[in-house]
Length: 376
Image (cartoon, rainbow, N blue to C red):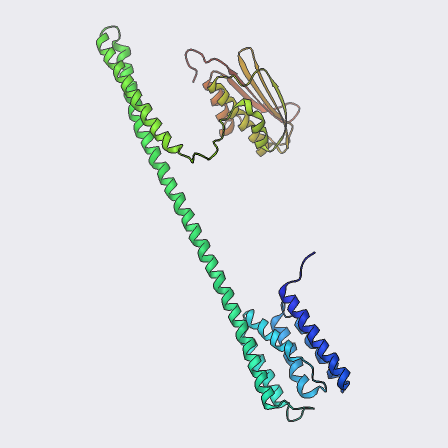
């Protein structure tokens, strides 16, 4: 059950006080005219509307109070409604309206002394004036304080965003620096290895001593390259010792891939999948991930089937869906193109296209041993 707001509670308590005071005045003196009933009801109605319509409520309450004290016969606590609505108007930013209506109410009560049923004496008038000024001032103070707190929160949020942007900028600069170092080290050293290997191949029979020198240079250069690469990767892999390290992707954890896809996948696994060569396992995992991603993005269905088998020296992967969408683009898309490149790099094949019965199929066939000539 929703609890009433503090403003609603204040309104209800004020109305209860006004009605109780009016009832006591009725019990003591009895009603003298219709204004004794109409004006309190009108003021209480305006009080209930002060949150949504602060200026309109203030005008209604001011008119009621200004007419009540000079012309009504009973002496009820109707002034409380004026103080509450003056505070609300000032707190909502209607300071000019609050001042104008407050002054108007005081003038009306002062002028009403000449022709009213009862008079508002000087001490009472001064007291009412003080409460009117205090109500308006208190509303203005609370509004200024709320604006100050809002501005302080915004400043804190801006400072946090600036700090995060600075951290992202520094991280981006560090990644760029590391990428440049890798490019410089690997590009230079691998180019040298290529040149020396060509020289060794050409002179291995005619000038074996030069071939030996070239091979020694290749050995030293490759050793230095590996050292530089390990150093750079060590910087990238620096994590807190207590931070968990995610396991490498593998077909042995295909259930993790299926769960991450967000699809309802029917799986069919056959043959050992936890003893595959590393390069085959990694490529197969990437193909499964990309194929399931294509189903999620393009097929228009939440259902798919995944079949993986390890038989006859090959890992065969089939991902199918029966959705109305189409993910086949003739091999020009980067997703299918990337899967095909991973398969052909290992000497395998990949076929992707729509099924005759509807939907889409991706089939990859990866050999467990790479060909000696290294298919690329």
